Amino acid sequence: MFSNNLIASVSVGLIILVVAIIAFLKFTKPGGSKQSTNASKLAGKLRDERVKSDIILNGIDDGVILLDEGQTIQLFNPAAAKITGWTIEEALGINWAAVIKLVNDKGQDYESTLNPFHLVYEQGHAIHDNNANLQSKSGKVISLSLTVSPLLDNSQQISGAIAVLRDVTKERKEEAQRAEFISTASHEMRTPVAAIEGYLALALNDRVSSIDSRARGYLDKAHESTQHLGKLFQDLLTSAKAEDGRLTSHPVVVEVGEFLQGLTNDLKFAAEKKGMIVEFTVGNGLTVDARAGDNKVVKPLYYSVADPDRMREVITNLFDNAVKYSEKGRITIGLTGDDKVVQFFIKDTGHGIPAEDIPHLFQKFYRVDNSNTRTIGGTGLGLFISRKIVELYGGRIWVESEVGKGSTFYINLPRISTQKAEELKKNEAAETQLKPITTLTQT
Image (cartoon, rainbow, N blue to C red; front, side, top):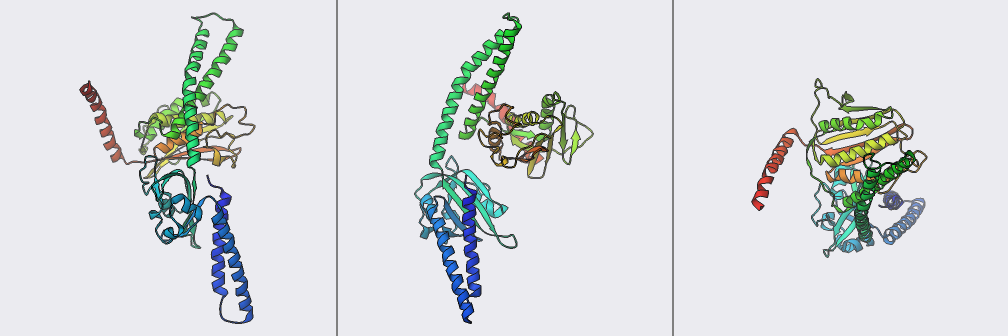
């Protein structure tokens, strides 16, 4: 990720330079000595600011590219030239698309709907991509961490954009090696842990063995610790697969309202044990009985394409966190959306999350460190895995929270129309019917 100080320094330097140029042009007019003196001073300041900007842009390792309103490259620092393989002279004055060739892990060109350089002009806010790959002028593929931010004029219209790109090939390779080690180690250690858990379960079975109450207490604790260790290994394995694209997924058409309503019914008991209220709402706060539904209520159908098992894993993790970090109150699972997006959320009335922790919350192994969390176990992988799963289906997950008032985790998934959903369901049914035939033919 890029340093906010770096981006701020570059942006401020450019803005100061532009302001200085405008001031210079405004005050450099024929006239008296006072005007000449002012012009001389401003020219000196202009040179100083230009020198400062050049020092910053030429000295940093991150590539900096400035685009104008027409998406033409107006600034291209030496680091950008080194990363892309294009010289400064070649890049200046041409459209960015001729220079910046972004590809995915399979070597396929980025679609415009995913390309930060396209999106920044459409959406008008900063776009971050830490998983991009750049195909250089020579054809070499370079791993990139990329941020593209819009430049807005006085009327808040986009007048250009500034891109900051960093070569993270070495870091990504090292991360892949770490992930491979974690994956292998977790897979190998799950087997003996499962065996230990099995033997402990047998020892605790009255039909198999006889033990006194004191020994049973020790074995119960050992069994709980073994289950926790098994969950840790499973989370490590899942996170490694999520990072390198090996996470299994079988997306199908899902009616999110029915899916969430049933899931709420399954999950509510853990919260009710703590005396908490669990509710399921649709649309503008309409509460629906999660156990039986409400046939009198006409609810909109929110279709999306996702793996129900994976999404169940995400929602269960968020719900369990809400229960763990709330002493009392209410947990709400809600559903809403528009023509393009299905949005659902898990809201609690718990401790809340400090503002400084929120930007890091979905990073691997990150845990909020305070008196409320130290007594609660966890791997720091649940939210990271949840983010990776949601992103599999073109979705987005984020949190809004206030300390002492609770947190709300939101998930957006692309919505498909009812007609499109019916078409996809027919295709899914046809594929299911063909599978046995294919198997017989191969036999």
